[in-house]
Length: 433
Image 1 (cartoon, one colour):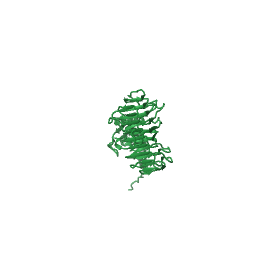
Image 2 (image 1 turned 90 degrees about the vertical axis):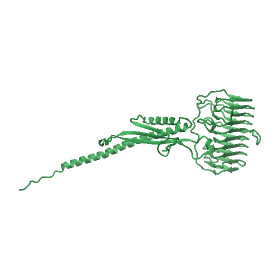
Image 3 (image 1 turned 30 degrees about the vertical axis):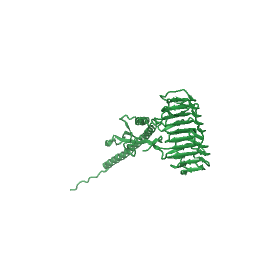
Image 4 (image 1 turned 60 degrees about the horizontal axis):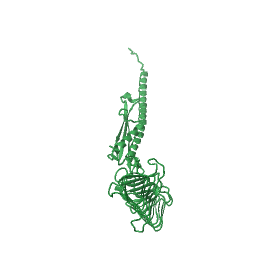
């Protein structure tokens, strides 16, 4: 008996194999598409996280002395995250701001803010295997950084020739830190025979070249990198809550002033003008001291005085601007403010005010009655020159002298003693992670 033969049919297997292959291809393609969607979302989140962390860093810098600075920084970060499409609704996205950060290299540091943005992205193709959403996260850290080096005396101009100059028998001395001449010009530093320039600690850094005669103590380095203004982060006072007074023109006797806004303060003859502790805004007319007059703190050892020399349209910009002028045997003696945003600073001249601070001494050599500006805090004129001449003296104890340009002529003296614990910290915002 012969059994019948059956033909094998492979056509059904081919269909199955084709179907499995197409499924695999679709799966791989789906994974690629879902990965692309996640990548796009991650980039959006990272941009938003960077923006929010930067906003927090700026807020921490500007509000360093505020008791609620962490709250202010958190609010700024959430605001910028919202502007970039992440409103922290807890459903479609979450925005977490940690001050201090809870992870990374700045964990536990209150000068930094960590921003984490999370979004559950709906998948397009891999839902077939039960994955309907995948979490995508963006993270950034922003905070306060300080420049690598401190200076007792800074001539800020990047182009002046010279930025710092000494002529005659002038003496300029920095103690506890160096001197920076920020100008890249030829002859950025100029000293002549008979002058004395000293920065034994920290040396003298010049962005441009130097023409230095006379005595120079401390390492002189030319061709150095230009630096940014270390106090550029400061926000000027706006006059809110301050009382406005009439201009003061004292010619004799003793007068005591309260903190507030004054068109000008002038003292001449034998007048003695005393300042109670607080903030003083000079609105357009400047400060003038001449003869044997004095402007000084009412009570040494108190919380100190902060003077802001603005222009006539304060708190707006514009209007006439007045200079600070000390002449004859006049004297300004201030103790820096020790509280609030301007702690460590005794005098700040608005950038709109380009009037030169002039200290011209008229006394005899070794005479303590020489024209003098003496303070225990930083003197800051970012857009104006400081000129000390005759037998004038500018003496800063535990602070900095920061001005656009600085000159000392005749038998004048500039002496600045820098101390890190009592100088306004140098802060600027930055993204660090």
